[in-house]
Each structure stands twice: as C-alpha cells, then as structure tokens.
Length: 230
Image (cartoon, rainbow, N blue to C red; front, side, top):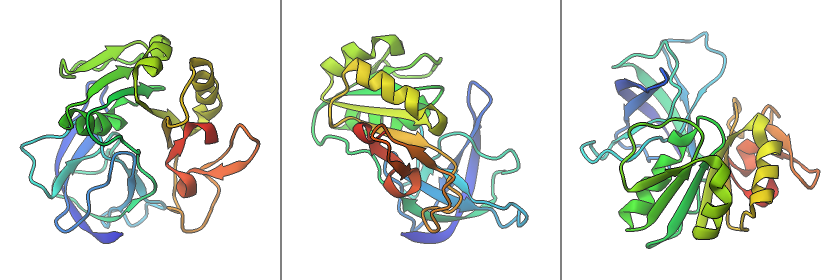
C-alpha cells in the first residue's frame, strides 16, 4: 500500500455534470478495477473524512504510465494542480478472466463509469463486452454493446463473467434482481458506499445485511463482493 502525494492534472466534466480527475501519481500503484483509494486534500484541513476515489472510464492510451482517471464524483472544491495525499490501493477488485472472454457489465443506477476499467481490460485481451444499463452513456466505442438492464438475463446466459455495480442502499434490490436473472457463482458486485475509516476502525457506516442474515462491511469484504454474499 502506498501513502504519497499526487497531482490533479485535469478536471473533466461528464455529460451529466459530474466531475472526475486525471491524477498523476509517480511511484504510486494504480488501483485495479474495483479497488479504491482514500484521498486527503491538505488545502481543506477542515474536511472531516477522506474522499473515496475509484478508477473510472476506459483507458486513455495517451496518458503517461503514472496517470489515471477517476470515476465521478470529485469534490467541487478540487482544482487542477491541487496536491492530494492518496492512501491505497485498498480493497478487493474484480476477478476479471484472463485471456479472451465474454463479459457482461451491469450498472444498477448511473454507475457505468465504474465498470468501464473492466471493459478496457477485457477488450485489450481480445474479449467481448456487453453493458447493461438504463442510463445514457453517449461516448462509448462500438466495441461495447449497450443494452437495457431489463435484458440482463440474456446477457448472463451469454457471458463467461458478470461484473456489476450498485450503491449500498440498493443492495437488497440488486440481490433480488441478480437472483431472478440467474447470476452465476462467479458474478461479482462493486458496492459503492462511504468508507471514512478505510477498513482501519470498522466504523460500520458501510455495513449491510446480506441475504443470509449476516452483517457485512463493504470496506472489509469488498468493495467488490461475490454476488451470493450480498
């Protein structure tokens, strides 16, 4: 795990107005798809908790090796050239199949950006990708097939692997949908939640009750979790 400063070299605005950043982190380890980092901005000493950053979007071939793009949402107070202290990478990322594979991505909400790093890795291995979402995403390449979420069952039958993304408050609904759609045991879900302690204190803010009645913490068991543990 790294703990070192990084520079915000660019702030980008998405089609929906959300903000993400291109980060330059020399010497830092880029997070795998689904992993996260905690970010502290020294210019905002009164901010009580760290900001959770995930990798987002498709890989940009023109970026230097030390640079990567976050998923939304970057605080409105962050600006290009800001120095932020990053801790991580943290947590479990997606277990993406090696070699060519057919991969389905399911975004439960406007969360497709968090899944696109998976798509980039699969396409680089000459695999196939289908995205299932009910949100608009106007700038995807033709190599990613986009389908409504209602057709996910067909995608699960087609795919070798399913990667999903949902919010903490949507866990019960997501669990029900995946069960109804016939998700396979190797399917995984990225659960997005505030994680102020970063798995250091078990503060409980990211706790949820799984289908078997157990209380689980996203920061300890995730944030990517096998779907049958939801």
